[in-house]
Image (cartoon, rainbow, N blue to C red; front, side, top):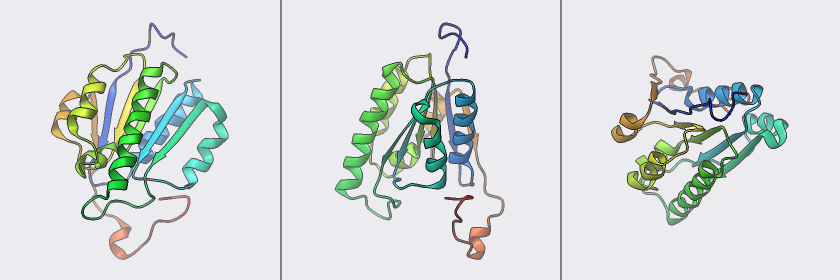
Length: 177
């Protein structure tokens, strides 16, 4: 692992309507843990023991996983519980960000939490402006706001060209969940 003084962390955003945003972030987590980094994974709008969560737990204390959701995506207007879970989650993410305990922090589906107004843009951007540069931060989810894209050092847009979901194929264990 690079010495903390030598490591400069960047802000990455994975967005777009295509498949692979969370998958790319988890691939980066795997690479980081292989290099001896500690990883924080905060998942908004999600809960449950998905296949990737089961696998990541095998890394023990090298990764901390927190989920801030009811287990289903928001449809229509968010409930008070959706908002409360997102606010609690963002507080937890900020604590991890400023703790100095993690070299990689992934805020999965944070863009969707912003899109559904579970969090305000400024309450997210303000701490990100002050983040320690000794940690890499990855934010995933569709609908990344323009202000976050401008702030980011790296932005990848996943574009759907073709998806078997359109033919009725549901999420499959080991592939999508």
